[in-house]
Image (cartoon, rainbow, N blue to C red; front, side, top):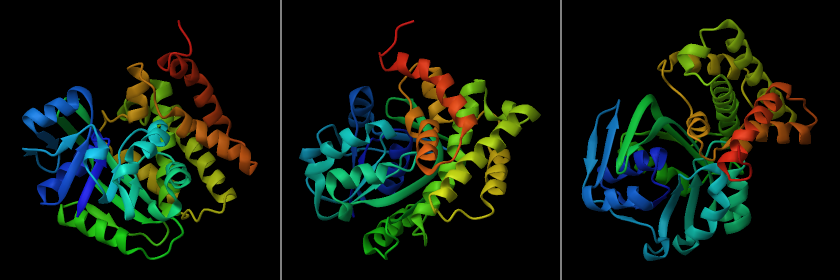
Length: 311
């Protein structure tokens, strides 16, 4: 398959690298020092599932030069989706599928509004990885997995073919029976994990071991679960227990990308994670007091990172 990875950072770079390693025709869309390193030194991936390097790498900052592809995997931050939709338009042909891998539950709708619903599949990834240095991705925790499916839960040959490519690349990938439920099940976990980590400014091994912050995490999970059910999402009864198990299986130094961005003074996905819980809960008539506290407490740092405040 011809696959473009738009946003070849920690997530896109890892999955794109695995596809290229397996022989798929992959182009990485990147920029700045990261792009320069990809072009000159190739891609280096340091992973708990085995290190590897790809050299040479097909990499560019100009999507129009790539031409139409079979699939675009979108690895940018959630707040960059609308801008990315316009940038990837030259790569989208009549049968191209676009798969967003953002945290949150709104990216597919944003892409559908810009590109047409017929091009957009739902995507859910689970991985802890980041850019350690230009051209260097570090995967530190969690066996990477992907779930890809039609947003209306209809069979889609494109989703099946793309998952087969990932499976050939050694990635746990499958087409679920309900991609909306998969999206929200991750949303339950990641918003609680990101929010508690960011507000406590500590890695998971610290805050999960303190009874008070562990109870905050459980409350945060419950709030998102209630929002999901009010919106008629078929979240399984085991979602809370599964999120607690996932919490305890993470490496003790694990942090979310949202927490790392806020700590570093960079724009984060706050509006699309904890802020989205508050917003979507309000729409559904569900109170989310803990997520509101987290969201409002982190807003000053978020606005400072975006240049809206100076202090």
